[in-house]
Image (cartoon, rainbow, N blue to C red; front, side, top):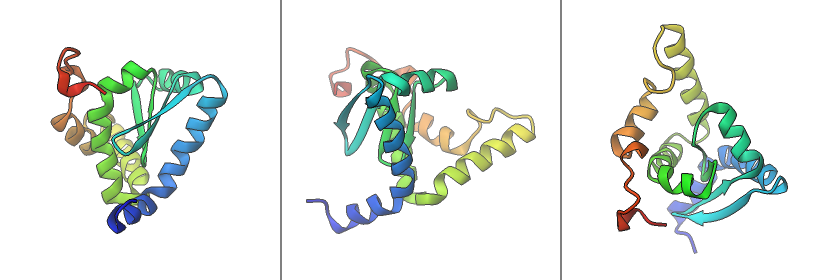
Length: 141
């Protein structure tokens, strides 16, 4: 049973988690799969994979849902996306407006709306998928 604090975090992130669950269900209905990992529901394949390909990203977090193109891709981006889960737990329903607002402002002033976003700077500072080592047993699912 989740602790009272975990229950509050689940409720605080619920609006964003529901968006992720909706995308995940669409993925499942189009041949995708789901799994549980580190307190999150992860979806991959199907329409989730196609949507992320269009966005040119390997993974995306929405509350306590992590979307990935493939199961192996999720393994590679999991630590990075878990940083975003913690950010959602701090910002709750304000995370997406803050993230998108900062990205828009960065684009407006001519900066990289993804790499210069402070949320991404923090996530890459803690876990950069480019540094993932497939033979590291601590990074296995």
